[in-house]
Amino acid sequence: MKSTIQFKIVTSIILFLIQPFSNFAQEVRYRGEITLTSGSFNGRTFVKEFKQDSILIETKMRGKNIYVDQFLPAHQVATIKVYSKFKHGRGAAKGALIGLGIGTFLGLISAVTASEDDYFYVTPLQGLIFFNVLTTPMPTLVGLVGGSRKSKKFIINGNIDAYNSQREEMQHLLTK
Image (tube, rainbow, N blue to C red; front, side):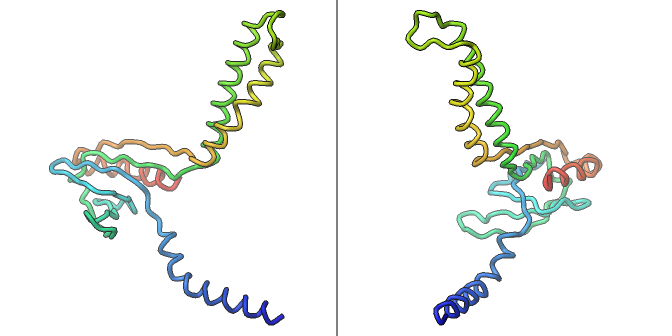
């Protein structure tokens, strides 16, 4: 009984100390690549929000592990490449389809090239089942772990009207 109370107290203290950092980790930001109309823009960039005439980005300071918020005027932007969030289900589905495709191909090839004199003779149905069972789990697992995400490149070329006409689509891709 006494150890249970001590465990609850220690757990409460740890959660109390960790809680302020939980909001820091959940801050919304998405990976993006931005090229400028003139000059260069180096460093790791996270897009936070697309404003009416600028982009709120978070960029890593060179040589330090510190990120700072910056407003980048839209008229200085040539292109923006926006990445969606990782989708592990979509990655697993792609992996499963790739595994099924490879298994079907190998199963059909093994059935077509097999003869009754072979040590390991399979019918087309047996070949499909065997090779699909053999080849589907690993690509599915890799896709599940790795995930999948979409990216799209938007061409702005310093034109505010072009930026504003694509802004809603860019924002939608970020939150998709």
